[in-house]
Picture 1 (cartoon, rainbow, N blue to C red):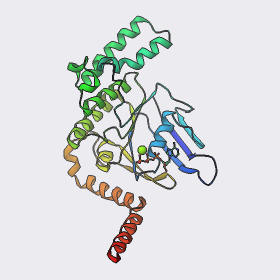
Picture 2 (cartoon, protein in one colour):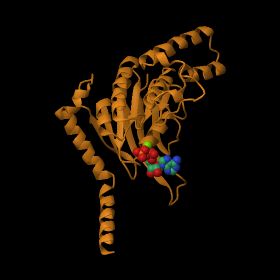
Picture 3 (cartoon, rainbow, N blue to C red):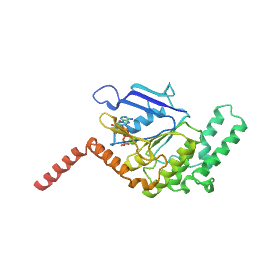
Picture 4 (spheres, rainbow, N blue to C red):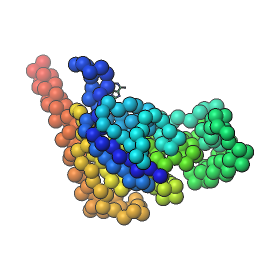
Amino acid sequence: MSKVHIHQLGKVFGAPSTNSVPALQDVDLTIQNGEFVTLVGASGCGKSTLLRILAGLEHRTSGSVQCNGIEITGPSADRAMVFQHYSLYPWLNVMNNIKFSRRLRVNREDITSADVEAASGRADALLDLIGLSKYANAYPNQLSGGMQQRVAIARALMGQPAMLLMDEPFGALDAQTREVMHDLILHIHRIEKTTIVFVTHDVDEAIYLGQRVVLMQPRPGRIHSIYPVPLPAQRDQEMKHAPEFRALKAEILARIRESSGMATDQDLLNKLHRASDLA
Ligand SMILES: Nc1ncnc2c1ncn2[C@@H]1O[C@H](COP(=O)(O)OP(=O)(O)OP(=O)(O)O)[C@@H](O)[C@H]1O
Ligand SMILES: [Mg+2]
């Protein structure tokens, strides 16, 4: 079970000099146990940094990040991460990729054969859940991108983490495969009751999946607004056409446009056009 409490979180990359980058500043966020929270915002607003701090892969500079009242100071099996790039081990088949972390633990801890047996049952169940039972013996290079990401999700779920941290996990997939993955991850969320923090560039994806959408702003990275999603818990693709969905999407896109520096880019482009006209 994991209730996350982020208080006045700050992260500065580099030495405290002129070159230092304030990636996060004064971030306050509480994530309820079992919640599905999505993070959106312009490039560079600190989404990945925040996720990596939650995973314990990055140290904070100031503030506190607690999971069930305990400060996060490093990685834990309780918080599993899924990345955008396909990160399966190419030399292991699907089943062994899913069981990989369990095998590591067998080497490290005093685990009984009954535990290993139970783990095999879970690996089978997860393979079923992601719809790839027939591919247990296939190798990653024999799978499509969407199939590989499904295996990566099953691998992350294998140790029954309380939290699943996902950084643009479907960013490299085509639109159709993404829709399938959306319904799969919602199904997994219902069944496993895992807390999910999901980073995306795609506002549709953020609204469709999230119970709350956290909009971040760059320079320095901080939270701009938190939007509760006004849709029923059980989602279906048709809801993307609902007026509530479209209104929230328009609002979030407008705020991202305001903060992404696009106006500045447009000015640059105009200057460039004027310069070419003069030449
Ligand atoms: N290891 C690092 N060293 C120095 N600066 C970094 C490092 N990682 C991130 N940054 C800086 O911190 C800021 C936030 O980066 P981060 O990767 O968290 O943004 P993001 O919101 O995930 O962006 P994107 O949407 O492009 O993935 C950026 O200005 C980035 O350049
Ligand atoms: Mg990122």
